[in-house]
Image 1: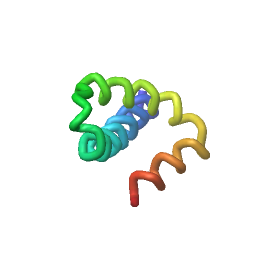
Image 2 (image 1 turned 180 degrees about the vertical axis):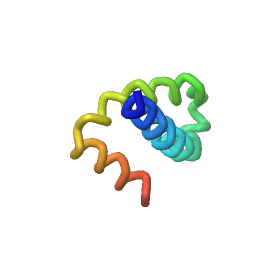
Image 3 (image 1 turned 135 degrees about the vertical axis):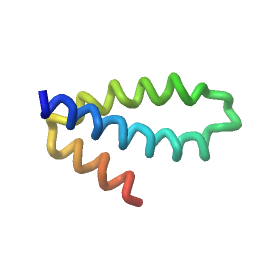
Length: 63
């Protein structure tokens, strides 16, 4: 249970960071930020168990 909560917190944190970057870049195209955030969270949950993908996401968001 703890691992699942940690996974969800991680996905939420990085989904929000990626979504903020996306909004600055794509806002004029009219893409719904809420839909994009839900999509990001779903995708990031699949990255959690792969250390390489997880560290890649973290390093991208630190820039």
